[in-house]
Image 1 (cartoon, helix red, strand yellow):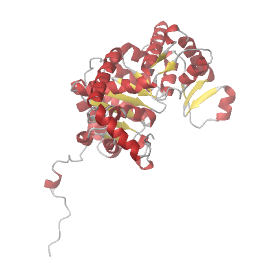
Image 2 (cartoon, one colour):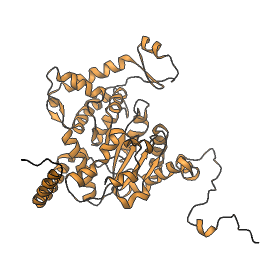
Image 3 (cartoon, helix red, strand yellow):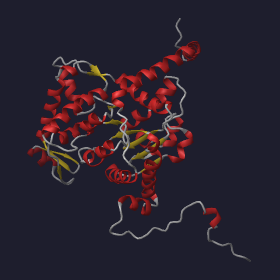
Image 4 (cartoon, one colour):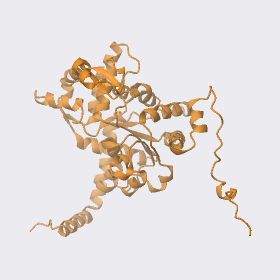
Length: 392
């Protein structure tokens, strides 16, 4: 009896590259290391992420939205990675936790943070007035001095009104930039770089950080500053609508998860579901995360799940990448890869077009609303009736 061969049939595997990496040499560049040796498991996903960025997301003047969660700026990743990406034109708009922007201020104000250890005695650190973020250490006065800077700046007359968080961060970034010049700092702050490059920076939960805490405290001293979250929602949707309506690709580059991830992605449901403007979802999705999908949380939700919400275009799903890796490992590698593989791009300076972009999506929303007003009214009435909400 003939035995069946256990060797795979080559014709069935012809379109899969063979695993046959070269030996790692001492002069191998980072980008070549990724292309040649990051071949499987999450190394393979990191290679796919790098190639997705360089070959599909960045070309043809595509729009790149980035979300930031996790303590990235305290670890120095603002200076080492985010600012180079921003200055190269590789990031067009940002949604960040307020905490990342608050700790970014320490660097912009030339305050010292130190490499430490996660195994120190926190009771002893507290007694000595030392703050710990895992293995990052800094003096408690860093917080007090940063708070004082924020409160002094927002006392200014230009802050005495409601404003969206991108406008707030732009104005705050101007003062950080001015202070950095006096201190002769080079590439000291994400906020200052956002101001210089016209990159809008949003915070999805503006009260959930020390910046928001200081704004709230100043409200007790009759400050008129308030965050216009409605403008934030519509402004971010306007950026995505501008990309898609002008024939560009809209991509999301997600570091971590949390509220900034959702705020970045909900732009498409805002356009499609709420405003009623026909759209297909973001074109490319890249996430670096340690969150699992099986817990049901948004942080670990996959791009396939996002398709069901209209957040990601279905036909681009094969190009979407999730790399299960710590951002402090993945981001420096991805930054080095893109800077070596892609030429710097022209700055879009979307912040300076914010009113124009918002007016454009507003006009389309109102136009669609006028066309479908009767139909929508009937639909709402039917849904209300079905839910027992009709007026008596």
